Length: 391
Image (cartoon, rainbow, N blue to C red; front, side, top):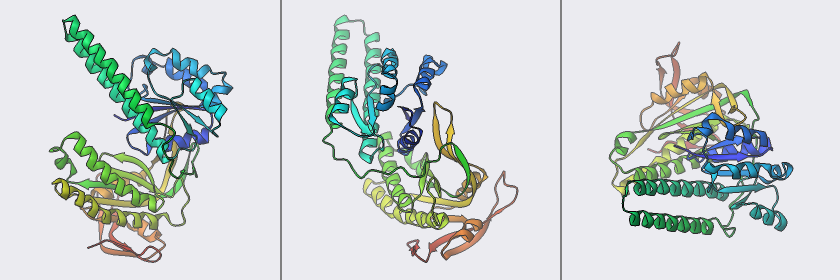
């Protein structure tokens, strides 16, 4: 289950950008509260009071400006919640100064971040949430053991182990998240859509072939390491051509080109990214060979058209997403692709601004489709891209 990160503030644009960067990790989900009143509603909700995992955070990020404007009431609400005891608390500020930092730490901040998260700051958030969940799970394990033990001396010993482990974890956490960590290049927030709109985009879906059977023979941590390596290579190709990753779908990806950033030719960018992704599978399979795993293959589908794109959800919880028939049809195209193939709808091929090399053509026929989708197997794109499938 994804770790829930509470993001509390009243700067809507910044909140949307923070949410996007947190959700892009794939291991976290941001629950945004756009006011002090929204925070009060969350802690008073039925899900929260019924100990729902959806509502309980692994980390809380709160805007320093909101705290000051609300006379520090949001902090009082958080500190009064017994269930939030021990949850890491991060503050975000527009501009750091000695006075602001001193007040933030005095009010209980573990770490102070800039509102425009850098990559290293997103890693801080992810690792702090992971450390907190590990500590919480360890506490639950020791508490269960203590309940089952009848010998009072063993119960005391377990309590000492718990305290030692907690002290050690917090020491490591504080050391890891010191301000001495060098910050990487700041990602500039661009084109975040407030609410949603209909928009012409190019949608790309990819999925591994043979991964399910392979993963059944592997330990969870081994599966995670392989997926992390695979996703890293795929993300490099998608981001190189200005794509936006919407969601991690198990061992697959849903990406869009043309939102939230306007692109001159999103379809050509998507095709070039897909070719780079297929070529990057050589590195993925080199990794697999070194580990003694079977080779993996990936199928890709690309389609274009009008979708609803934007932040979907409510005041308390939002998510950047794309919705529409184009997404469903792209899924059908991708499911018809073989390992190593890139299937692109004829509509998308016609939109490409550069000549596209097509090895063969077919009609996609699938349940739920009123009529077949003409598509082609793309093996290269010319012009400014000069990108081709490696033999």
